[in-house]
Image (cartoon, rainbow over all chains, first blue to last red; front, side):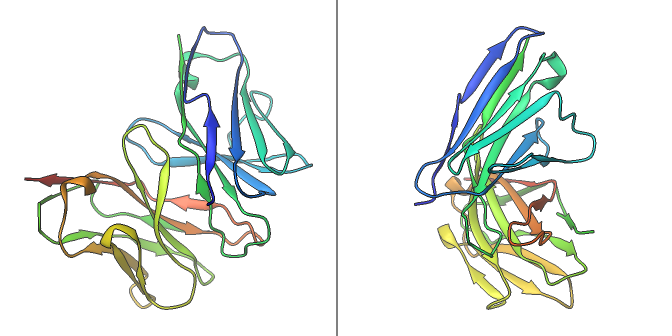
Length: 117
Length: 115
C-alpha cells in the first residue's frame, strides 16, 4: 500500500516551453502533497505544499507563477513548469501524506527528470 | 526552526562491516525523525521513523536507529553491510505544521560498499 506514482519519469523539452508533471497517490487519499526539487548530488529542497481544493503554499524563493501547482482531487497533484529554461533542469520529486494520519509520514514518488535544452 | 546535519557526505565500508551513518537534529519541539534511502534516479524509500514511541527504531533491510534526546542524534546503523546497501541516505525531521508537517532533509550521505 501507499504507492505514489509520477508521470512522466523523464522529459526533455525546449527552452520556453511548459512541462506538466503529475503526481498520483494510487491506493490512498492525500489531502496534502509536497513537491521537492533535487539538484545533482544534493538534498531535496521543498518547493511547495499542495493542498486539495486550495492554493498551494510556496517556500521562500520559489516563483509561484513559474511553478504552477494544482491539486484538484485527493489523489492527484500537478506541477507545471512554465516557460522552462535550462536552469530549471532538475529532478522533481513529489510526496503524499495520507489523509487523517498524524505522524507526518510522506510517501514519495519515483521522481521526474526534467532536462531543458 | 528545525534543521538536520548529516556528518560525512560519503561513507565507505567493506561488505560485512558495520554501517554507521550519523544524523544530528535541531528542533524546538519534540521531533519526528526519518531515514530515507535513495537509489540512483529513483525517489525516496522510507527506511524507518521515530514518532515519540520507542527510542530504538527498527526498519527495513536490517537497519535501525536510536533516538538520543540528550545528544540530539538519530544515527542509522546496520550490523553487516551488503552490496545492495550502496545508495544515498537522507535523514529528515518533521516541522510539525499541524498534522501534515513537511520534512526538512539533511544533505545526504552516500554509502559505498566494497567487496
